[in-house]
Length: 340
Length: 185
Image (cartoon, rainbow over the protein chains, first blue to last red):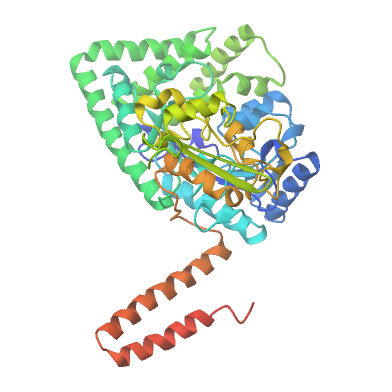
């Protein structure tokens, strides 16, 4: 299963939900203080926790070619920082692709789980079960007062980042992103644009996550994030409706033009892709267009990222080659598609 | 608190260093701190854009003294041996290593430099006390402690209310709770 090709709850606004837990082994230093022997030991120990469990597979991440490492980041399986380095490191992945355990990211272990739509609690449960497996077999660095001990003091406590990727074209059109970011900052949440090429505004994708990890429980963090983003989603739906009410033909025209480009263009770069994705996705959510699904569009977006294209191609490509492959890939996905 | 040099102005700069295991601390006003800096008695802290460095002494400074905000920290004085400074027993990091990188050297650093780190942690999170989940081993221990604490409180109020029968029962429960798990160790 790919999270980006599966229908999730409230997928009109919520693209994905993600939980990350930072964990460290008690007897090892962090980051640059780790020598190669210790790095190998840690990879071996964490790998050992999941060995024998058919639900998980291990990959020696450092042995993967650069393209594949970058593609894993574009799929949101691992963090971009993790993908960039070629140092000794590994990934343990659940067979359904939901959980990935990054070994030797900034912390010794980062457990991540990602699900489509709004599904923070489910994502937490999945991460938590991998975490339980980890602490049943290894000595995890923990302090009664400070909680889980992490490389960076910003992650102390629960060591948890909960985040949702939201699709907010209505809020963008209404000029509400800046004030949203300000308001969120005041209540301990942050908003970031989608990582990778192209600016956030192009795809109207924003990642909202908790900032504070100490002095709050995992449950409180998740329910606060769900509450707040639920309100943002309500507001977003209102903005979209206003947009449509104000200029139905204008909106429909934009949506259909974007869809037409997806169907017939020969070259599409990432920046244009993000705009097309955003316009068509909005059209689907507003009922302007019904020949493609939201999850198909999310799949198109991820599969059209530069490293994902090169991974599918099996080697390096120039920007020109990528733009052509991107347009071709989109056409293929759309032609094999109809309503599900 | 008054400046310990001039004994006139309010102290706004708090300097501490550990040399040869001996701690020296100074509480100075901005003027005297400036003088002390000129004389080389206390040293600059490099200004760094990180959690430990920037604004580390924020609490100690009023807004007007912002200029001095980056001046002082806990660093070794020139000419004195570096290896005498407090080091983390697990990874060997000094507090200035933490300040420079903005990150801990190992899990043990948090215990080694707990006092030094406390204001920073508090500034980031607004608190220094964890309330969330724990590894299974710690969880058991914490549940035990919490149970004992709750029983102690109940016992206290039972005694206060002169409910001696209830108190006796609680005392037995408390004894059992305290003994729980300890015989296996």
